Structures are given as structure tokens and as C-alpha cells.
Amino acid sequence: MTRFMNNLEVELFLKQELPENSEEYSGSQIENLLSWLCTAPRFTTFRVNTLVTTAQEVCELIASRLIKQAATQGRSLAVFNVTVHPKLPDTVIIGSLDETNLKPQEREIIVDATCGAAVLRGAHVFAPGIMGMPTGVHCGDTVSVFADIVGQCKKGFQKHYTQGSKIFLGNGIVHMERKHLYAKDLKPVGVAIEMIATVSGCPVIGADCLSPNLALLQNLPSILCGHVLSPLENEVILDMCAAPGNKTTHLAMLMGDQGVIIALDKTESKVNNIVKRCQQFSLRSVHAFVYDSTKSVHIMTGPQDPQEQHKSVPQGPPFRQESFDRILLDAPCSALGQRPQLANRITANQLKSYPSLQRKLFQSAVLLLRPGGTLIYSTCTVTVGENEGLVLWALEHFSNLELMPTVPVLGGPGLKGSGLTEEQRHCVQRFGPPLVGNDFDRDTVGFFIAHFRKKTTVGIT
Ligand SMILES: C[S@@+](CC[C@H](N)C(=O)[O-])C[C@H]1O[C@@H](n2cnc3c(N)ncnc32)[C@H](O)[C@@H]1O
Image (tube, rainbow, N blue to C red; front, side, top):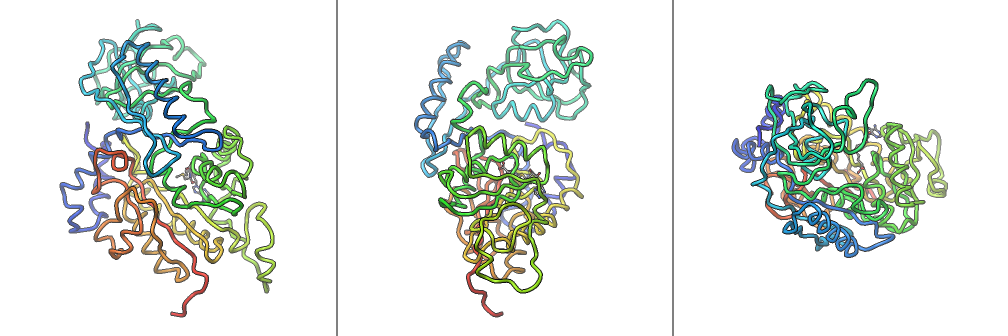
């Protein structure tokens, strides 16, 4: 695999901010982190809709579907290992095949880096992702798919692409040719190349694999987040940064769809996706709003009656302080834990901007949480400032918060040298280097989870 996304700014940023002189992050370890981020995880995970089925049933459905698929493609020896996660009863894990000997075909299609990353995780190629397709390629042809990782291939390129860096992703069958993709005024959608096999060995799971109300593709640490929050039936929950609603729908399922979940996101189109996702699972407990969560606290002026405060279920933002039993702050972040990273144009300045937004959101979360309530903070990134750094800042600024263990434990502890004590390091969970391995709990996306509890009485300091 190539060097980390050709983004020196990000490499330098990570080298500077990962704990200096930490035995976990010496020079070679940073190289390991960067190359780990360039590869695709070797496990695919589904979260099951436990309101209508079981993980075991979904395992059986996926296994039989994959066997049929392999047989129609003449790959009957391709047997995927499909199992239920031993600690997460709603999670199905599919191992990858060894496809290191996959041979490229003569005809090559070029896709952009985003599409390429999705293909390596098991997606088909959708029309908008195709950059170059040589003339003479027709529907039904078997082709190889390559990703242009430097973004130089012009849309509609029609020759054999030799100009920039490209990496081989896998082979597939053409469903749309040039006339379907590039004719004037066309905005093509849908599957253009049906992937048969990818070099990552991930199962290719199209929309037709499972009925959409049965399960959802979701990364393992994201599924863990819901279990760590562990919402109970009839509680009042706030999901502060909720779109597209993957974790929101999980919380609703864990609560048996009984109770109230308020899902906020500041972008209207994304909130529409939350609504669609909830409809897909026929959930009634979720109420989604377009709202900036940094402004979601209604600050009361004048004396407040404490009885009054807890009387009603919150209707819509802004909310009174202490309105929620549990809050999930799955924060906007630099997303440097996403794998594989084939290209990334983020700048150092953008990277530096996240902690202040995360702190503003966190401040609102603390005000909105009831005493005794649970606050889960998570990111899908590997930087210290957005993870252990946020936890340190929170413990320094909110004497009414205590850091609690995150259970069940699947990931590793927080980084050494990040300022957290040994006990605090083992309360949080970090997914990604230095703790990596070949099993489904280690070969994940990079992720971070911390669990806070709001004390019922505040000690005088
Ligand atoms: C990591 S994503 C959330 C993913 C989501 N929790 C899930 O599992 O499907 C972060 C989200 O935060 C939203 N966001 C960013 N700033 C926000 C703000 N000030 N208030 C509310 N949402 C915000 C973004 O639009 C984005 O959808």
C-alpha cells in the first residue's frame, strides 16, 4: 500500500502532537500508524435490528447469500467466516478472504479515492465515482478497478490511465458503459461496476444482500458506543451530533423503542437521513431536529423551581438544563481513524480547529445532563487533542464530572504520555495503534470512547 494519503501536513501534525518520547509513539510507531490507516480493516460488521430478528438469523442469511454469490461467480471455494460477536449480541462479524493473488484484468477503470476506499470495504462502484473508462468497454465485460489516489484523472478520461498514481482495487463486471456515464446532461446514479472480488478480501455486500430493516453496516467501535451508553427503556436520551443516525437507531433498539431520543444535527439534509434511517427500522421513539448543539441549552433567567425542571419530557431544542438521563456526544472530528485512507486533503489548520468545537459541544452536554446521568464522548479519529486531550480538559473544567470505565472492553487504553493517569487511561478505550492485531476487536477503524458521570453532589474544592 502507498504512503499515507500523500498529505505531509497531516503526517507532520501527527508526529508533533502524539505524546513526545512516549514509548508507544516513537518514530517507527508513527510509521506503523500511518500505514495501518492506509489499509482496509479485514472485518466487516453488521448491527442487527434486534426489534425484529436475531444476530444468529442474520448470520445465517448473510452466509447463505455469500455462498450463492460465490457459486454464481464460479468461486465456490470462497467461504467467509460469519459469526456473532462474543461480547456484543447484536453484532455480526464477517472475516475477509485472502485475495493477495488476485490478478488485474487487461481493461482498467479509474475511480476516485473516496469510491476506492468504499470498494476496499466491500462496496460496488457507483456511477458518480468513475473517473476514467476506456472506449470499447461494454456492459458485461470483466474489468479491473483502480483508484486514482492523487486526484489527477479527469472525469471522462477515455484512454489507458498512466499519468498519476493508481492502485489496484479488484475486479468487477461492467453495468454502465461510457454512453451511460458521460453523455451530455446526464447525472448517472446506481451501480456501474458490480465488484466480484477486491484485494482487501472483504465480502462484496450489495443492497440486495439483506432486507434493509434487518441490519445495518456499522463499524465495530461505533456499535460499542451504544452499548457503553447503555440506555434503558423509558429514559430520555440526547444524541447531540446524530446524522446519519446510525448510533441513534442503535440506542432506540437498545431501549426497545420505548422512551424518548432527541437526535440533533446542524445540517438539514443530514437530518433528513436520520428520519429515513428511523423509518427504515420503523422507530417511533426518535425525534430529529435541525439544530446547532452548541446552542441547545435554554439558559433560564430568574429563580427556578427544581420540581418544575424535571416535570416534562423535552419537546424540542433549546432544552432546559439537566433535561436528559443520558447523552451521546459523537463529536465532529478530523476522522483520521477512517480506514483505508487513500487520499486526504485535510489541512493542519482544519485539524487544529476541532478541539475548540468539541469543547463547546461538551459544555452544552454537561449542562443538559441530569445529576447522576451518563455522558459518552466519542470520535473516529486518532489525534490526542480530540481524545485524551478532551478528557483531561473536561476533568479539569467540570468538577461535577467523574470519569467512569467504558464497558464492555474491546479496545485498548488511552495513550501513555497523554497526561491521563494509569487509572484514567484504562477507563477510556482507544482503537488503533499501538494496540493492533489480526482479530476483529483490533483490526477496526481508529476510534475513541470516554464515559463520564455527572455527580449528584458537587464536592467543595
Ligand atoms: C461523527 S458525525 C456523527 C455520526 C452519527 N453519530 C452516527 O453514528 O450516525 C458528526 C456529525 O456532527 C454534526 N455536527 C457538526 N457540528 C455540529 C453542531 N454544532 N451541532 C450539531 N451537529 C453538528 C455533523 O453534521 C455530523 O453529521
